[in-house]
Image 1: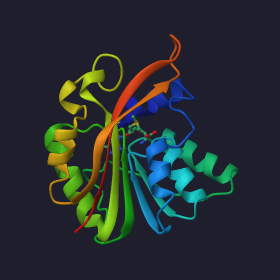
Image 2 (image 1 turned 90 degrees about the vertical axis):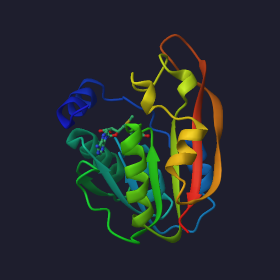
Image 3 (image 1 turned 60 degrees about the horizontal axis):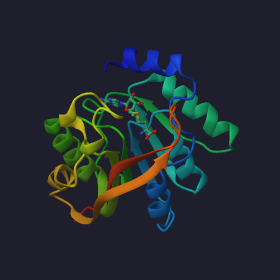
Image 4 (image 1 turned 180 degrees about the horizontal axis):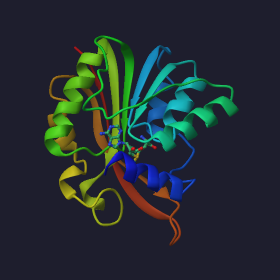
Length: 196
Ligand SMILES: C[S@@+](CC[C@H](N)C(=O)[O-])C[C@H]1O[C@@H](n2cnc3c(N)ncnc32)[C@H](O)[C@@H]1O
């Protein structure tokens, strides 16, 4: 989707995503000493804002101006601050050894882009820094996530994308989610890895 399409989607739905941070992210990052964090494809900021409230200095990057405006407003309303950068991650220089934590939450890039993105993330992390990623599992294709099944996560796909890292965790995470048809069980793939 283009930036304009994401903007239109955010404009059409003020509450596109939950306001809660991703639960496995909160559990994992809650045990780390806060430092500098980068949230790639931060959307309207649920994870970035939560990290900022925990003491992290957070840079949030997203294609969508509308989403990041919303993120900045919500952060300010909660007394938190974000550095918001409207950018396509393909064209944005994340810097080198600039972050202790990088979050990639429900971004679902194409396979070749997935590998390229995590290579960029690796360079952006300090040695010993962590990447946290979560995405919709392939088995949920057709129920949620993007229409192209190639973009969905499997543990094997994520392991491949993170092959340059020390992999600490890569597993399925099943949980119940509110949906227009009532509560339903869904599954994500969650991974944590450390830059060598
Ligand atoms: C499904 S949303 C996830 C938002 C957020 N990470 C979360 O977990 O709530 C995907 C986000 O990725 C952003 N995005 C998609 N392609 C992007 C790109 N090439 N560069 C930066 N952001 C991108 C979209 O604008 C959208 O906000």
